[in-house]
Length: 130
Image 1 (cartoon, rainbow, N blue to C red):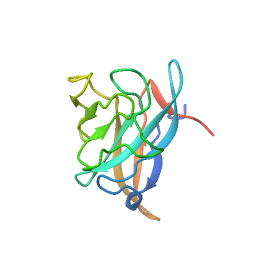
Image 2 (tube, one colour):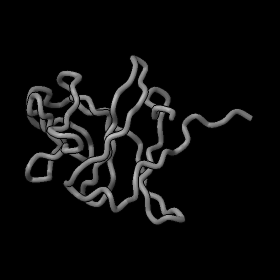
Image 3 (tube, rainbow, N blue to C red):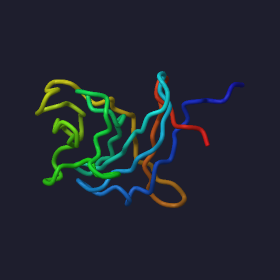
């Protein structure tokens, strides 16, 4: 039997993601090479996205892991100021209005070590194998 290459990947303990707070970055593989994905918490739920602005494919964070703008209500691209809804990835302001961030499938699970956030990779975006 072939191993499942899309197994859930533990990202962090659930408590490490705080609503509107710092995000967690992870290296990933995409069809055109390597990339970074990130995970944040908004409205009590974890969310994950490919770290590429929908306007120009540049990383969003201002400083490593800092994806939210000052109110903690929107994700913001540090380069062009595009503003995204943290729960949908939809651009609601700036140069790519109506565009979307590439959303990841994320879920929170209870584990023996306590609640944790997991990424469920899909066919064209996978974690870098260490």
